[in-house]
Amino acid sequence: MAYLEQIIGNNLKKYRKARDLTLEKLAEKIDINYQNLSKIENGKGFLTAETFEKLCEALMITPAQLVDIDSNNLPEKINQDGIKLLLLQLIRTLDDNKSQALYKLILAFLEAIKD
Image 1 (spheres, one colour):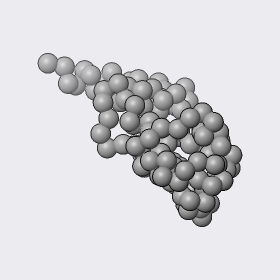
Image 2 (cartoon, helix red, strand yellow; image 1 turned 45 degrees about the horizontal axis):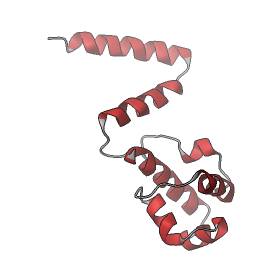
Image 3 (cartoon, helix red, strand yellow; image 1 turned 30 degrees about the vertical axis):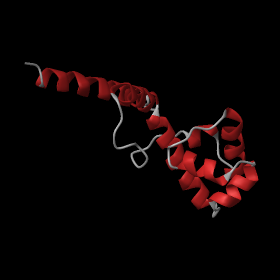
Image 4 (spheres, rainbow, N blue to C red; image 1 turned 90 degrees about the horizontal axis):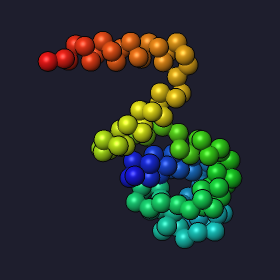
């Protein structure tokens, strides 16, 4: 699940910088080693539920904000399962009209690429 680690890391960095916090200061606030926090921020380490909660509290964000997916924080390469999960998460954010439009678009696309 490296894609999720990258998304969290990218969001963590964005919110940390927005709060004008260094890695060292944020690590101190949440009582973890700053090298471990650096690994989390770089998508090379994963965090515990306790650390996740402490990060949200220290950065004054919701858990949803820490795992939010947008076009600026998607990993460059992800496996097929990752792509499916990301697509499902993105689809869940659509209202009914946009869901219907996307469904029609996908049907038209599949028809167009048929052998």
